[in-house]
Length: 103
Image (cartoon, rainbow, N blue to C red):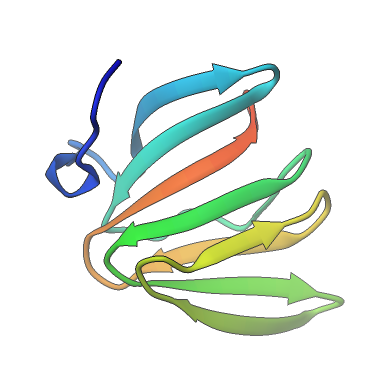
């Protein structure tokens, strides 16, 4: 058993992760970042929960880009095939639940 305080986790590079658990084929990881990720499409669903900081989530659908502002407590759910990229606005900590090995 353990207690994790997300605000005390800081990575050495953007998108460093603390592996919390793997349940079946899904991983639960706490990420720290202060830099954008990259445009990507997961090979399955992704649940992205902002725990600390603010994130602008960009989504692309048929060459149209939408932007969503995420604050602590907000949940972004991407389905298989949804193209997206996260842009933190300063340091942010996010909980990501997705298929093991997904990008």
